[in-house]
Length: 241
Image 1 (spheres, rainbow, N blue to C red):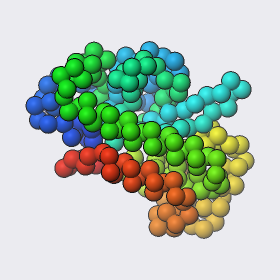
Image 2: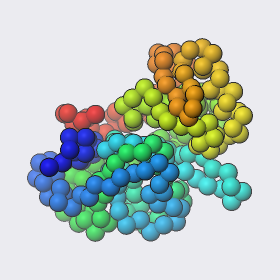
Image 3: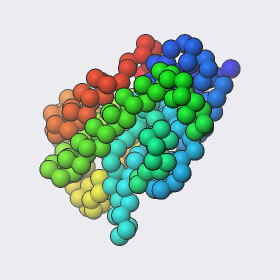
Image 4: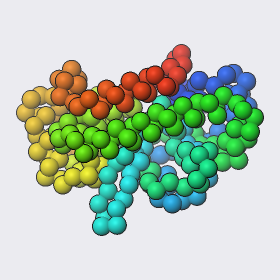
């Protein structure tokens, strides 16, 4: 019997499928652990599985030739990882790396293609999610260009905590610097600013949210813009997180 915290319906897309579609897919879904730092796929990989997280957070990361990198999107239990399977390109220029450990259900490429050929509801939901993801990556590009590191840190914290459904995240400042595409010293300064204002507590690789209203007041417009689009495009199935 599946543990309640490992129920496939903890993923919002799977939970939104009609009963008939869900029953047809259930035997094809394989539960996999997503340990911290696991590369679900590297840049240019021929993706063989679509992953539906039920917990944890996966980062889509773009790596430059000089070794620098930057996160372009986050995926939690609202979405899926591996959209190149049904977009026709077979691979993506980004790598997908587990930022916060959890679990996901994976679906083989051939099964996803079968569902698309059937015109099943998963086809419709996958395209809606892709539109939402495009919104997030576009807004991240705008944010990185026009907003301060303090604002970008606030956006990242809110988006991550939303996907963890928690007020605490395990993250080092070194990893934060990698995801935001800035120097570690710059992240340290931004974290210190939030600590001084009692917005967060941070120590030993953990950040705890103390004052969400204040964090939301300090974030740039990008967080709200992306959240609005996700709420507009993605379903909110009954009982899902």
